[in-house]
Image 1: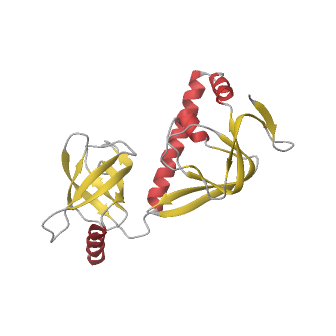
Image 2: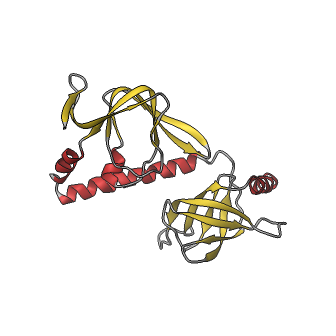
Image 3: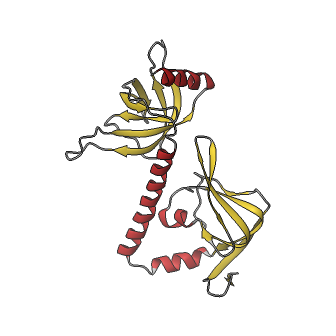
Length: 237
């Protein structure tokens, strides 16, 4: 049964389909997971955070009456951050039938604009996180590498590199958010080091942009030995 909840005078009245309770520190949803439910905080608080290079950064803490999870619904994208309960927290799950009904009242043109803006906002978040990870200086080095698409390994070379990621100079672009295996040849090593990477952003060839096409990628998984060898190379470059 759907019930209406008015958090405080002057706030919107929310059609709540169900309630969920969480203990302090309990995860509501994880960054990167699928899900398109929209929540409203009925009591307690919700911490919103992102993980960048293994470190958790708190973006905001939501209080009673605040809504979250809307990007997944409007953009049909995976969760862009992790939501965690702060203290004993009760959430209202906003009725999906009501959301669909209200959303479908919009013209097709306006719905397309809204979805486009949500996805562009996600791209901005991803790019901002990519810039945030650049705490270490990037070495401008052209290193031989190979990355695996869905079928085979493609040879390319790096434009710049840090301990957190690198730019791959290539016209064979993967999709943003796609994960792949990278083989990177460091000078003085007989075998390339390997790492699992994720595409953060892409740039296509353009007649008006003289910058080379390619992909900005971040390292997701790398053995401790390979990480040490990469660090030693960067310190000496």
